Image 1 (tube, helix red, strand yellow):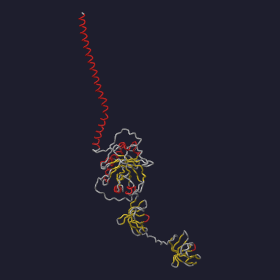
Image 2 (tube, one colour):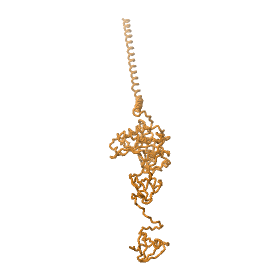
Image 3 (tube, one colour):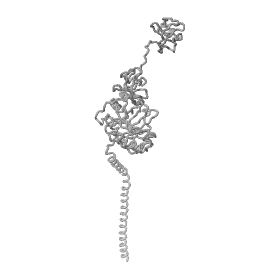
Image 4 (cartoon, one colour):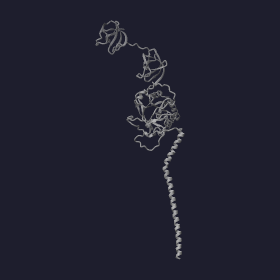
Length: 501
């Protein structure tokens, strides 16, 4: 029984032991499976999260590439180094880097350059003097669209300014003053401007300038902020397609917080040129207070620069160029002359005039040292007057040549005759010409000069009442008469004479 019991026990123990081992192995296998699954899930979840930003960035790059193909016609963008103009109080928060449209016709540098922007309102500029003053660049107005009729007009000094500035070593850019009310008009403006500047070495950007839209009489008045922005972007895109670097110009107050322009749309693709005038100009004030990224800063509209007759806008650009760009149209432009009437408003007329006496005819409406007397117009000679300015000048044509004369010296009365002038006798006492017979009331001394104190005023003759002679002049200030007596010009006190009827 005991052996059987022991044997039974052993058999039971082996069975129990076998069951226990299999169970343990199964449990261990299950645990290992769970651990393996956890590891897999860990790599799938946490490792995937760490990789996600890189994947998102790759997606963004692809999206940018697709956008270039569809909207930008595979244009080659350059990094604008937009962080360069951050002001000290900016935190440098993480942000996407904009891709600014920049022409490849001239290589940009990161130097700071100084410039002016000009139009006909600055008059005739001496560009050599401007260059000698250290100005690096000039933004030149090429034209504008009128605020009511919408006509595109060329700035009367645009070609002269581009010609002379570049000839004197000043790099040039350009700007157009827009009143476009549609994207189509904005593109038209850009194409028109590109045609005007194509024969000149435009190196600096070409700017879109739009102001005055708050005026009810301006054709822009009814446009929304979005519509204005659409026009600006259309102009700037077209300028880039024409081969130039576009730039958007507006004031700090208009651009900040997208107040008057959707600046957040514009500055993604285009350089910004901000106007903001501190109490102390650059370089006393080192940077603009405009909070947005900008490539150019107009820091005053009241600058004084040698060679510029009128106050001028002054600018700093946070970039420069190694050399001037080549003109896109290699055909040389015609020689341009300055518009000498740029600072004046002439009313067009057509009438014949003559000189009241003898009038100087000049090459420009100015009596300053910059004008030249080309010829004279005498009484009886005639000229065709084609314009009269509100500043007192007349534009004349003689034998097809243009001249300028002071309007007060001219008359439309062709029968006018110049009064006969008295010869200058060297006397300070001036006489009004008369011709009348006089006689002394009692007696009068006739002197060589109109004076009783001058030693040279000797008495030549003494005449008594009843003797008649001719008085040729009267001075009412000092009471003297000029008379003719025995073939001599003599002088006497007027109160001692009576007129003989």
